[in-house]
Length: 91
Image 1 (cartoon, one colour):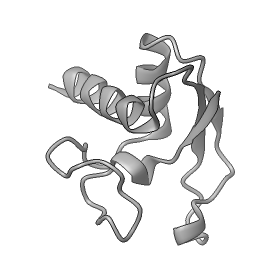
Image 2: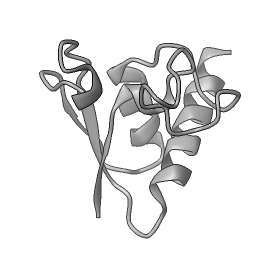
Image 3: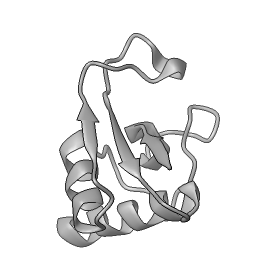
Image 4: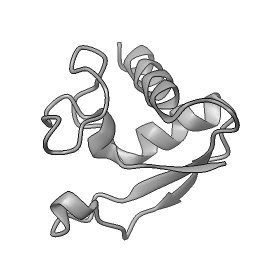
């Protein structure tokens, strides 16, 4: 099953209302598409990056998105794993 991951989903600077889907303490600050894609690749999720897409809640900002193959894992679990992987590479 394919799943779209927008950077806002794991951005600690965004509120839940703005689109963050995981707890703030689990989120990362300003994740880039390359951060997300690299983490997804390490987790064997076959990421495909689309740079010219805009998150519907902030249509004016071309943030891009990453599409991953998540199998039977929940979207929330994938977001948490990607966020933790990014945290690990940043520290």
